[in-house]
Length: 180
Image (cartoon, rainbow, N blue to C red; front, top):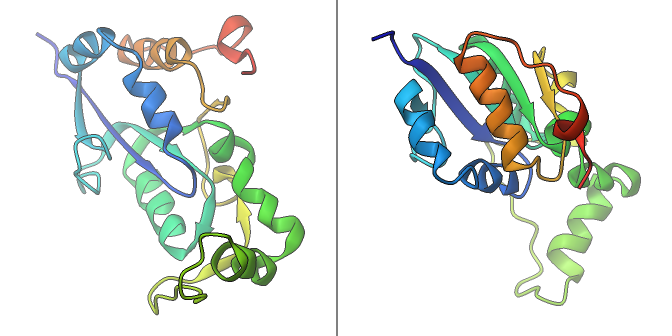
């Protein structure tokens, strides 16, 4: 039996809907784990791909802060093939809407003015710097495969993964690029 392909995934600034769509491959997930080893994913709760690297890295979400940037760079360094999964990773998506208002205005609205505001304090962590603009993944690291959609369909995700697991680079066209 051939050695299983190693796959790692993570999410950056986004809603995690792309990983939910990955889970929507339903019973095909059994086929996936027969052909691939999921080394680190939010699904398995393992946070970082091995220093030995993986064949396929998958990132969803935009790059919004220094922690996202570090995760993106680490995944790129440790992946032979990097997939930008979903509109946020491919284009910047919804998180880039804050770019039009500016970071200070977006933080004020989100943490001070919202109807659900409790203490009116913008959270701060000394080790995480919020970027002035949210960016798509390829503005931070090189990307090999772009799979747009909000989220991409389970069928499109399955197509890309099954092609890679068969040793082929997927050609995305037609129904796999339908907008939702």
